[in-house]
Length: 107
Ligand SMILES: [Zn+2]
Image (tube, rainbow, N blue to C red; front, side):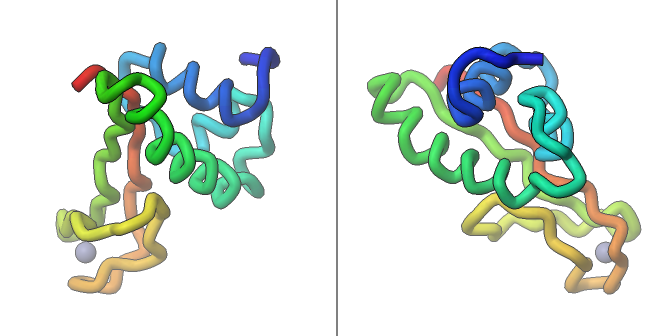
């Protein structure tokens, strides 16, 4: 668990060092937030990181998001404008949705 720097800096560091893309729950755990209540906060940080990382790295880094997917029918939420976990599938109405996954990678 990282305790150095601000929450946002720690999230950025974790997403640069991770091999596997991470969901908001895991990110919250890694930076010491309560994962059951901090999902929205993590998404807010991710939105900000996505905006700034490209500029700060002079175009070398990007925050990638693997979109959420319905576990029941396989529907992929490709058109999300902001990172979040949808509550139900528009196609089959299932609530079994895998959350979006994140990782910072070189372009
Ligand atoms: Zn579905």
